[in-house]
Each structure stands twice: as structure tokens, then as C-alpha cells.
Amino acid sequence: MAALLQVPVLIVTSLNRILIPAGLVTAIVSYLRRKQDIGGWFLYFYFWIGAVLLIYLTDALGNYRVFLPSSKLDPTHQFALIIAVYPRLLALLGVVGIAVAIVKWREWVWIERVRLMLGVTAVIAAISVALDAKYFPRSLFANLIRCTMLWVWFIYFHVSKRVHHVFRTKDWDKFSARQA
Image 1 (cartoon, rainbow, N blue to C red):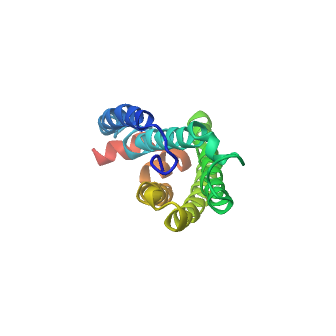
Image 2: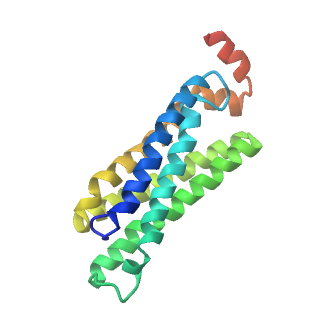
């Protein structure tokens, strides 16, 4: 999307310089905390949604001019861009908000809500990917990976034993001790 929207390469490079090392550090910390209630893949989920939100915000806010009527995009491409970017961003903001509530209140109802919101966000991202395929092929690969990861997280929140034991049965300490 950066090349299509003429995002300065400096912004993309700066994000990569921050997110790649931060991702590696978070992966190590997540591994080391794998026995803790907020550790392992569950902890990595927080890094991932934060990183993707940062990327989406950088794309949307850093390139606000292409969304304005005076931009050089033809109206069809501009409308497709708006439909591809803003619903995806708003849906991810919903996931982030619910993810914060999960850690704050640690109740099962928030897990059910994040599952629903991840599903909605993944569907919106799939629509965005379809628009990318037609109108913005340079963005297709990166957005397809993000969409795929949304589906992975959606599945994770349905099958994770950690999520079940931390938030539903609230017996993670006993469960993780048996696994050791």
C-alpha cells in the first residue's frame, strides 16, 4: 500500500525498524512467560494487534490526502480505498478495545466478545483483500497476510486451552502445573 499511496519510504522503513525487533523481543518474552496466565501465544496476540493497529493508523493517517476529494485518484479507486481502509481500521480498534477489557476484567464474556469482533474484523479484512486484488494489487500480499492472521487469532480464541483455563474455569495455575 505504501508504494500505491506514495507513502514516504522513510515511514515504512522506520516502522520496520521498530516492529521487527519488537516482534522478536515479544516472541522471546512470550515464550519465557508461556507458563503464566498472560503469556505464550496469548501475550503475543497483544503485540500483534498493537503492531497491526499501528500499521493501519500509519497508512490511514499518514496518507490522509488520498482520501480527500481533491486527491489524484479517480472516484472509483478513491471509494474502493475508503471501503478497504476505514472499516478495517475501525474493526481492529474494536478488537483492541475488547482486548484491553479482557486483561482488565478477566471475565469470559470479554472472550466471547473478542471472538465475535475478531470474526467481524476478519470478514471485513477479507472484503478489503478482495478490493486490493481488484484495485490495489501492490497491497494485496501484506493485507492477505494480515487477514490470514486475523483468522488464525479467531481460531486461537476458540481452541486455546489457556484462554479456557484463565478466563472460563479460572484454574490456569492448576492446569499449567499439571502440564509441567
